[in-house]
Length: 222
Ligand SMILES: C[S@@+](CC[C@H](N)C(=O)[O-])C[C@H]1O[C@@H](n2cnc3c(N)ncnc32)[C@H](O)[C@@H]1O
Image (tube, rainbow, N blue to C red):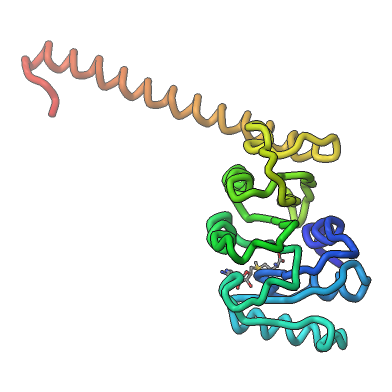
């Protein structure tokens, strides 16, 4: 597996899990899970015909077409979910993920949801808590110079603490990610200070220039 993201997702999958991989694209995760017997079964699904075609070709290359069913579907719309207990949503934006999970009838049997969102992690954590899933584990992985929090939610009434929603689960293994956040924050604060200072200078310049102009001409600059 040459993706740290997908590898970490696979580490959150258990042998008894029946997985629906939503937005499977190349289906590499499903192939890896089934080839290595890491789960009971896996279904690969995507909204895009081209993406699913690519997935089907890869599944065929690995001789797994009788083990990995595929479905063309917008989220869970065309999928019979009752035989599955785990969802994977990876490589999509937060709003798409939340939209896909908005049909709560489809989630009745789903005990575990693994998410690698492209953005807005606090929103994802907040929404998952709202629909009854608790952030139980989280591992941040670096993939192609980018940090990705891989989140494992389980069906539970419990809610995460506000700081867990904002920043994720504090874990020693995620320290390189926190360092990256602090570095970026420092840079942002520096940029804000710089922009503020520039604005103040402009304001003051303009303010004194106005005064000076009024003094020599008796009128205001428009
Ligand atoms: C960047 S790929 C991610 C592929 C793989 N899951 C990964 O993490 O490497 C995103 C995939 O999500 C699919 N997708 C986007 N919206 C979707 C939806 N509403 N339902 C199903 N698939 C969707 C896209 O067609 C695309 O193939």
